[in-house]
Image: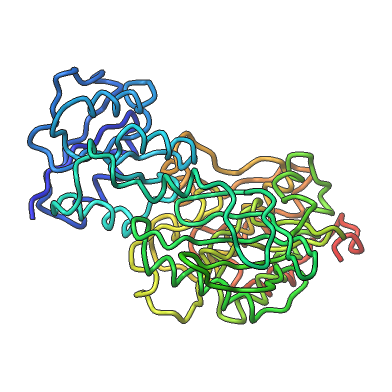
Length: 415
């Protein structure tokens, strides 16, 4: 197979990343990389002829690439276009309405997902973008409003992505407020593999009884979706508290609660793999809770379940090995905890950049961040969690839990 793929985007690292994934899977592929900022807008007469597929980034020529997408759709028999965007729900719907054949969220990009989406198009198994048919399921999902599920009264939607939606609801029998996470069985977005992972989420967490791990109340399958009912944590996320500022003693205490939860998970053979402040919530009694194990995986599971060469998680909190799709073990969660601890202490992320790939590269190459002088007592913990090589980090979450600063901290604040 010699697919011909045209990649359009302002950002050089995005173009190179997409090219790397494509030629890794199809060594004979002809991939043309178009620098839309340097070369300017393609002319109105550009027909895309000679290409099997167009990958269009959401920044093109310094403007919103949706305008380019609309221009291309005015050309008859234009090749199918996959829009590569930021994952925002509104952008997904707008791209669909403008005629995109499919959509990829760049911050959720991984090798397997990209290849699974691209392959049917270059094999001729999908219609051109101008047909506007490929996104019909996602369009219905976005416009359907609140779903109906026996036994629950839906209040409002909290979040949504390509494969699942999260709602606030009342359990009618008990009157309890719960969070319902619903996965719709939409083959365009992963089919059976995604469905299986969603069910694994419940099976993994349901075995754990720990004060800092979310409580799961129910699992069910109804009509075209599966659902998980879990406790509602109404005091907000750790992200909100970081923005307000945390005292060092409080940051250390919260870090230890997270480490305690990770100890329980890891000793049960489970990795979280998407640890970040928005996945750390607080109950009414102010206790901390780890949530959203959508990327969790039993350490003993074989690679067939998640595929090889995949990048999961959030770039700001992603370990060097996870960001480069290398083998990941529990020390990847320890690295993420180190990033969160640094952010709790300083109010800022240690590595930032304009693109996801630039942040991933910093995790691998940039020096371990240094704390200001007044927080230097915590630097050994940061060094032990953020070592570039897994073998140089704390060997386990239990070791993190056992660590304590040598001076300057009221030990009672860490309980």
